Image 1 (cartoon, rainbow, N blue to C red):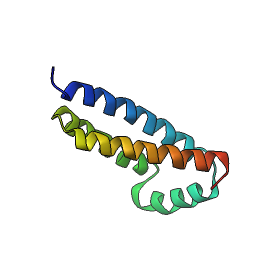
Image 2: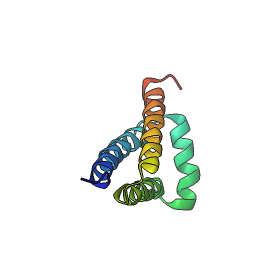
Image 3: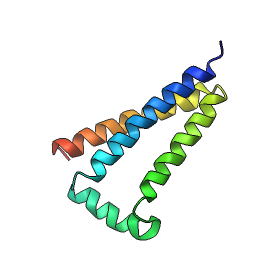
Length: 94
């Protein structure tokens, strides 16, 4: 069995986690997040950040389907950084 399907499923699960964290942060009402939404919303619209998140997920899944473990590891690191940032914002430590 090739590595591609396992990497693809892993990236998909990480993508679900990223979208859940993204939504939680977007709805948190944190002043930094609200300022960022106002600034980027003027350029990308209200759902532009979700489109960027989707583009990252599609790119990671495409590379994972090709059997690229490096991109999957980078996407896992991106997810871990998102997790830390989400925890900092939602816990009031940032």
